[in-house]
Image 1 (cartoon, rainbow, N blue to C red):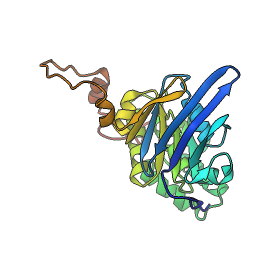
Image 2 (cartoon, rainbow, N blue to C red; image 1 turned 135 degrees about the horizontal axis):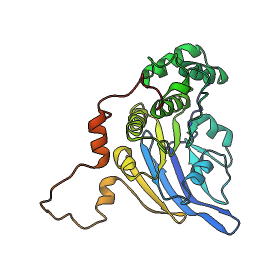
Image 3 (cartoon, one colour; image 1 turned 90 degrees about the vertical axis):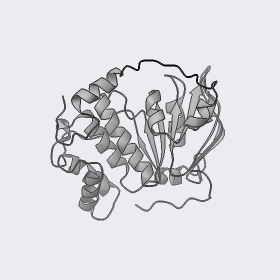
Image 4 (cartoon, one colour; image 1 turned 135 degrees about the vertical axis):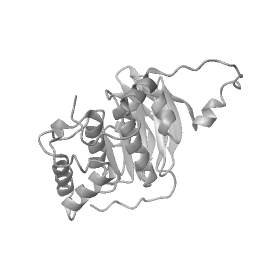
Length: 267
């Protein structure tokens, strides 16, 4: 598949005045934001804030009631087919075939996209996501983090310039979440634009170049982490005894922050 050249320069995504209602329920009430090319943009919000609705509109799976959205230079309302050629969407649950091996999943998607040499594409992605040793095993034996990494690898087949990750670490344990963080940061390192929705604040703090908070259908703040911190009064210096968090204790005991598990099975 050949990725369509964007019709105009500018940000990877530009959203203006986006509105969406379901009956009397106003989910989006004028959403505005830009996403720079090659960056990780985190869209935060509680359940029901409208994060998934926003992603579905940008991915052309849902029509907005009002407003405009441009992805990779294409209007989502009038150029939906070109938008779909430019993006990949990874939902809240890994869309992998558990009967097939990791490599077979990748080869299948490459063939469905009519790409040359699906085997070489699969092998390259297995190496990139540290899954080579597990590539021949059935996905049913994979841990949660390995499945998620495979799912993200599958979404990269065809080299889409824009990736939507809708709560990619929902339900994962701390080690698996760190594995996914590493994979997402690697995407941006290769020039892919990532829009990430999450409820985990530390996830956005760890990965995002820019953060927007969606609340009651509107973006109430949008900026870098440093810009968001400046919204609060300067910190006062206090001498306190810092205790490790439970997550830090867990990772220290299990050694989960040192390396990825490429051979472990699902627990």
